[in-house]
Length: 70
Image 1 (cartoon, helix red, strand yellow):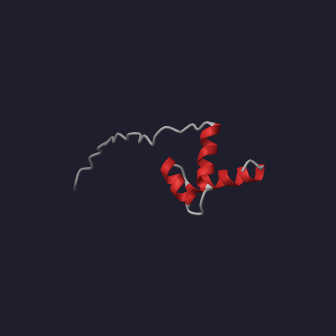
Image 2: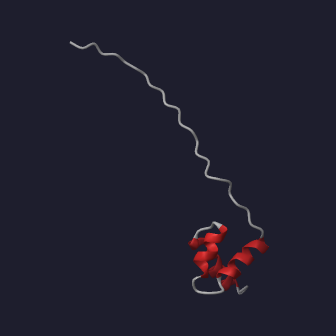
């Protein structure tokens, strides 16, 4: 009969740093949104250039239009 040996194995997990949350000034936000509104394909390229999601860029555009600022 095999003898049962209890072994405790501890594994260390590291925290993966995903980056710092960006802070945009109101002027920077407006610049990004206005840039994204120039052509129909500009939203994707603008979002990529600034490292933000396409949906966030589109949402900001919709919000500004509804507020009558664009």
